[in-house]
Image 1 (tube, rainbow, N blue to C red):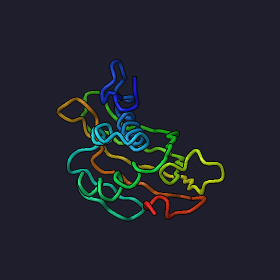
Image 2: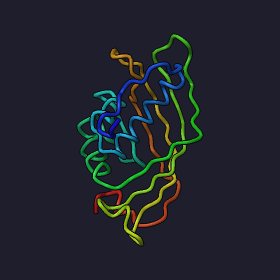
Image 3: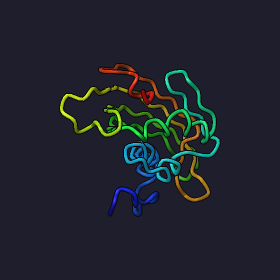
Length: 156
């Protein structure tokens, strides 16, 4: 399996795992520059609040997030995931912590390259879409700390 052919749907997951998979699809889509995988994690009218900067709709999320981060050498590690979902319901919420390493495009493997390491908290509301995938409708990302050059996350 190549990185560009990662499936959007996985078989045999529990409801809780399907909900969490939306966040995994989002960050793996960023880390591998896989637009289809990234898009499968969000509704068309999703809202993404990044430290108070609100992006409304998938086009705005592409312009203000995906198009910048997908060009970088990144790795996002998600942990401490907590899910609130009831059996048979089509809405859920989750919280998670993350560490994310960012380098300018092509510099991730360079010894001594300037990078950006961030600690982030995620708050996500999700719905089960008509295609059967859980997707984020409203997300907040709060950076709690960082080390390195913040300009990297802005594509500079």
